[in-house]
Amino acid sequence: MYLLLSIFLFITPFHVEQLLKKGEISEVEKECKGLEDESFFMGEVNFLKKDFNSALSFYNELPVSSPYANDALFRMLLIKEINKESLEFYAEAELAILMGKFDKGIKYIQEGISRDSSTYSYAASLLSIAYEKKDDIVMAIQVLLDAVQLEPNNLLTPYLLERAGILCVRMGRYDDARDVYEKLCASFPDSPIISIVRNRIKQLP
Image (cartoon, rainbow, N blue to C red; front, side, top):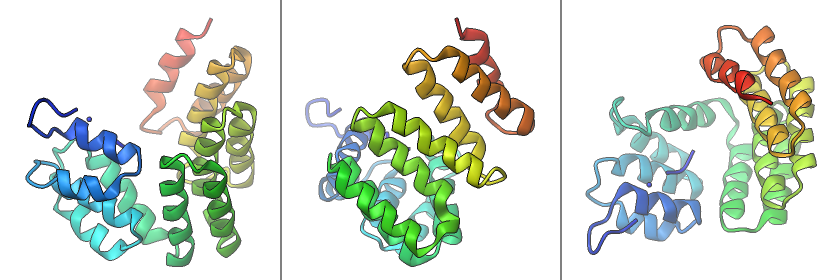
């Protein structure tokens, strides 16, 4: 979801992306000025500041040809579908995770779930990232699979399964990865990521 180094005095999207990945949103706000994808980065800044209306406005300004268009559409979906109270906790969680405060991020996610349990699939995607960064890959996989079991028809389910498969491969659990990928293909044959997943299956040892 975050993206692209400064060369001499030239600011590039990569440089701003790296600042965003570290949670340096004040620097992002300053450095993105004048970039072609400024509206995306400003959307991210406002999302992480929990100013969701402003974030929506910036995301709406982004051209569909932008490499960040899908990321912006996903953010817009979250803002429109998740209640504001839960989303505030998730934005806090995401910023904490970006800044390396993983346990704090997990607490925010748990607060978000407690406000609205129907947001669990999205919460699980954040939890998985937090556990992965804590080097607890087993838990990172488990929270994804738990979410799939709890909400099998959620819009995010194919992506959670794909992520679980990727993490299984990282652990050398190739049979588990195959099972997860094949479940995804069987349950969501029309998913936009289906061709990617089938290719992942072919690449398994």
